[in-house]
Length: 234
Image (cartoon, rainbow, N blue to C red; front, top):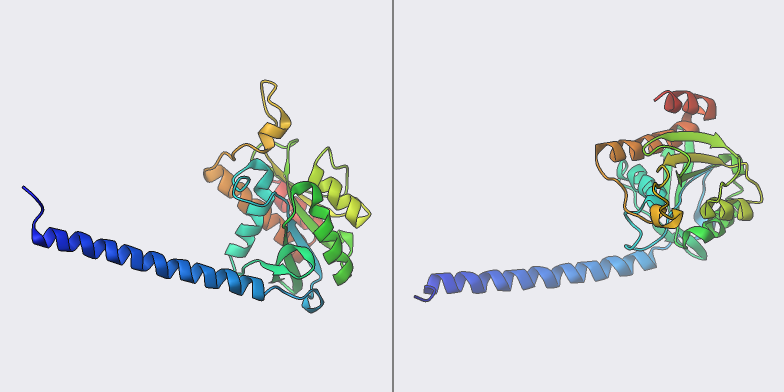
């Protein structure tokens, strides 16, 4: 027995409604993309005392990998305020101006791959006259257990290509780091496969991202020593 007339009309109505919403959503997405391009910020219009930089690789292929926890922390930082990242003309980065306490801050994500991250940060620091000790870099750290967060000023890069690029383009190692532990691989797994592997998501991971964001905020509002005392006691 075939479908009734009412059932047929219902199916047709559903299909028409689906394609109507699909077309409308596509149009909104296109307009949003065009608006994003046209609303790119001018470097001369930016003003900040601090940079908070999340390291990672662009593109969906890397979005949920251990190497991208710095990107994830920037997303979490912005989620609290509803701010969004915007391109900067002439700089390979997206930024969002924030106010943390009395300080004007620029949240930054480079749009280059990890090993070239310093290009954009160096350009922003030079243009805004921000010293290295007011640049906070959030990055994955092999030498810390997963979900552990530590803060430090300066030090070696320990083979981290994003930090190497930062040091090169800033001309110093004396910038702040929020080190986000991802642990080391076992059973001889290559480091590159580990850092580009998927994160172990769940409550512990979410809390670690939130802690890293809190660490960056505390450095800006309360200073390095207090931030270390509060975060390192956990």
